[in-house]
Length: 72
Image (cartoon, rainbow, N blue to C red; front, side, top):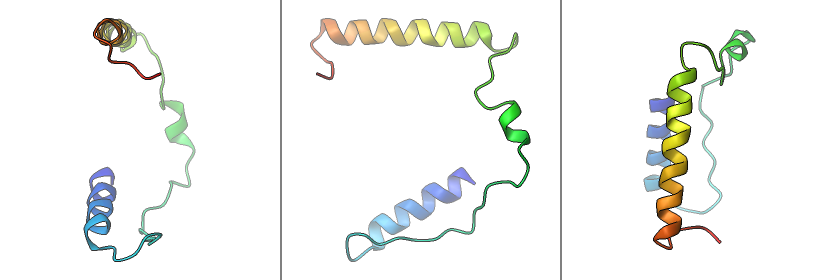
């Protein structure tokens, strides 16, 4: 579904003739609330990986600051 949404957005970007054009897609949220159980869940299986990704992100932001690459 994400690929379909991206493709539709890119198609609209190239085809829209005027600003404010809206395109309705047939995609709908699931009636089930089950997706919430795992959405952004931190578990024993992914905790180490998430910590590692966070550490790398902080190191990269520090390198960016040292090079003057930061958002004011």
